[in-house]
Length: 38
Image 1 (cartoon, rainbow, N blue to C red):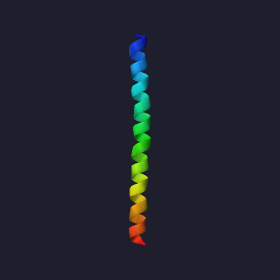
Image 2 (cartoon, rainbow, N blue to C red):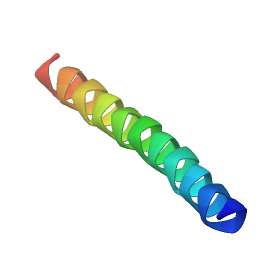
Image 3 (spheres, rainbow, N blue to C red):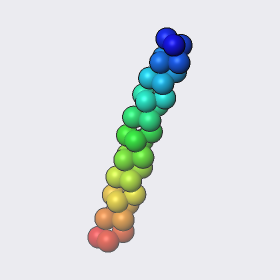
Image 4 (cartoon, one colour):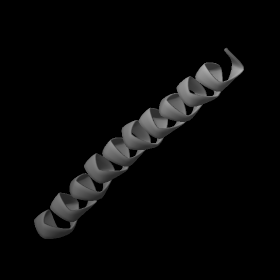
C-alpha cells in the first residue's frame, strides 16, 4: 500500500511541474507575438 501511495505522489508532483512548464511556454509565445506587433 505504501509503495503505491508513493508512486501516486510522484505522479502528482510531475503533473504540477508539467503545468508550470506549459504556462511558461505559453507566456514566451505571447511575448514573441507582442514583439512582432510592434
